[in-house]
Length: 408
Image (cartoon, rainbow, N blue to C red; front, side, top):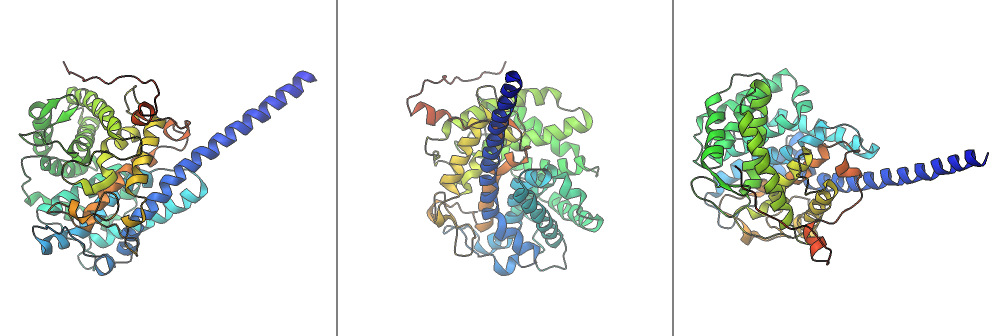
């Protein structure tokens, strides 16, 4: 009898502990979901109602190179970038009841937004032709690659419109830098969903980066010259990983490149995590810094794909990324009175903008939300909080060192 009572007490205690852990994990996840909602709601509520052009402010860089053209492009920028960041969450299932309800709402909003953005009879039909539209059509295509659920629920008419719109981007010749991956991503979308695609466009991007532009220690140059900025994260490594992954899945191509890229990706994830300071800030160098938390697109993507190196615990990365979100997305000055993001990194700082920035550009920040595509019981969510590198080191904890990686 005593043994039975003891067993019952043990189960009650263990169950209570498990229940608390689940509650804590759900709480951590909902913090992310609530931040996602705050950031993207103005974009999708307005575009779903066919009122994005009418209601979205026209804030552009004070040093804009072409104000009229930048405003015309901002609507696809807002859609493509916001969608690509929340796509894994839209594709996921489960979570707390409040999250499930919100996800269902956003699925409907995103489908309506895509319908309006690709229908030339609608007020919110966006610009698909030209240089800047190539960039943001590729983020839009990336969103569709990450969210098969959305693609499958668009309906045949909207799917046809999407294909027609993405085909328009083929007339744009990309620059000889990370832009070749924008064209590659659109072709990867066509490949993934069974449409005619240009394998040479994919080959060009993969071969050029993997055989000519890898500089070493986890970093690629952005073209023929290395730039000390966040473009390895904004575009290069997440795009390469997705493009190569689709080509490998569909036809077994790039097996060697895929294996090499994973080693590069792992090393760059280590570098990214080390740049997040103890307070969630990070070095504000390089162009496009107003993309805020989008600077950690790569680290978030590696966490989402559960491909973090052994040196990085998932909960450690979760805490680091949340600190970045708090630093870059939480300050009240990040938004105007109607909830639209304003230009800056830590509040409103238009002086940080580049010539090509507009209000739509800023929504690349949503790439930090990629881990919401993981199941609620994944280690990223359920594991207890753990200090990231800088927080541990600068609080006096003993910690492992960091070393360069040479690929043989």
